Amino acid sequence: MSELGGNAPFIVFEDADIDQAVHAAMTSKFRNAGQTCVCADRFIIHEAIEEEFIKALSEKVSKFKMGPGLNDATTMGPLIADTAVAIIGGKVKEAIADGAHLVLGGAPIPELGPNFFQPTILRNVSPSSRIWCTETFGPVVAIATFNHEDEAIHLANDSPYGLASYFCSTDMSRVFRVAERYVY
View 1: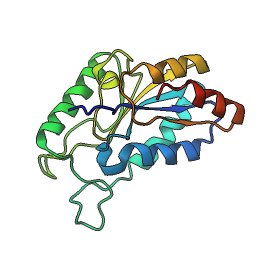
View 2: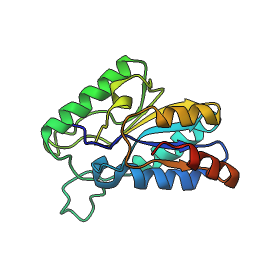
View 3: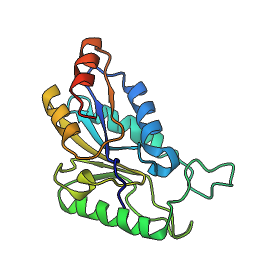
View 4: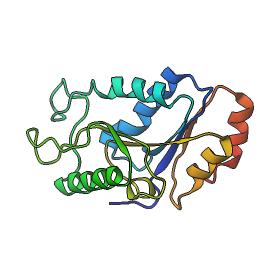
């Protein structure tokens, strides 16, 4: 279920403002339940802040109210089709079998209807896994860590797709340096 251009990377450097990075992640990942071609798919988090970032992101994501879009209390609605739920569920199971750790979610929500899937956070995702290498087009945050800037840029650019890319840093020299090195 890929489009020409999805699978956007989202890098969070060790100097990033975590609250701002989580806000940006929420905006860039969960818009329309992760179903836009510019949604972040691959989260590349510096290992020194991974725990803090995941904790803060999990707290925000766990507050979503799933339901029909016409319900005023709903903050995240359904996926486009039940086939999308099956594809995403399969990718999550494969990622876990490949060594990823489920932090949050990871399953359909049949009591809401056939097109609902829990907002999901996976950590320790392998950069060779299908969930990393192909656009997920759904509410799944796939996290891998890095230690050095060059490693983050390599992971971000290790895809033939890309309409968008995101990164968070408070170091302005890094901002310009990284922006120049992104392929997209």
